[in-house]
Length: 397
Image 1 (cartoon, rainbow, N blue to C red):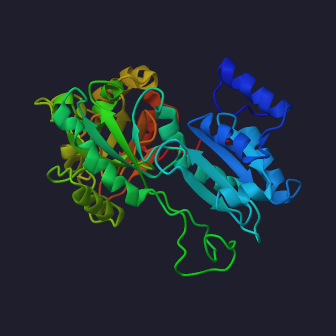
Image 2 (image 1 turned 180 degrees about the vertical axis):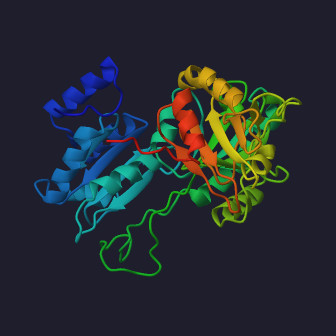
């Protein structure tokens, strides 16, 4: 069986079937058909190959068959190489926005690396500054760019809209260089390592978020409301760590300086924390927040069992009663604390929660020890775990 990439609606499936059944790339034979093809879409990919039967061209056809949401063309005529300033096999991305033509020369030694080319095309098919909408959200996240620089603004405010100019000016320096790891020069082919030839690096994607539009849905993730706009945030996508300036400065130079400082590890993440409830420690289940977590979880005199949850999570809701019963059972034990923390409203610097519920046990004693609980989530198994000092006793054979 074949996996259908791209959109899984009827249009996407039909497009994929047609691409698989017929030529995956349109043959472009002269300047007129080339110009018409380039102008037919906002974005097209064209492979210029001296030999359309060669390995590089065949790899290009295979890639085109998979990337069904993009129009692909091929050319081998010498006049077309000359018309577009090329002298060697090259894949070109043509756009009606930002850079009009972006070249990806084929390494004559390594051939066409389709995985690398796919990544490059994903990145460069994005606008230099994206707007976060329902239509672009999948494109933004599927590009797999490791950092997102976000400008939150209210699009109904002309004053806030003007902040996009400085934001865009800062973006150009973080698009990434289009180079392969080994190269000689832009035209003469790629293969010989040169110190001045950097790796391709698209580190930061710049995104404008309208707090009155689709972007309103993501505000709780940042602990923000629409009234906080305009403001800037940088997100490290691998762990959802968020960074913010001490005081927002929307100039392009300030934005660039801030991003460099984050990438160099000179800025600490901004961690969300709710305010602790007044009765947080009066009930059997202690309610922790970001700013109280350390003092409770790493209390050397206590064994602390913490449930990290999300209020909307059905699995969390299903085990809520067992967690309350567990706390009731151990409420008179001075050395045991049963606690919970809403991870959608609170973040920790050295603990990243990837799923809900997540249960961690913090044993008493010196040091910052932590044990993840991965067994059955019921009252009796929880009790065995606690009574055995943070491990489950081996069952007799």
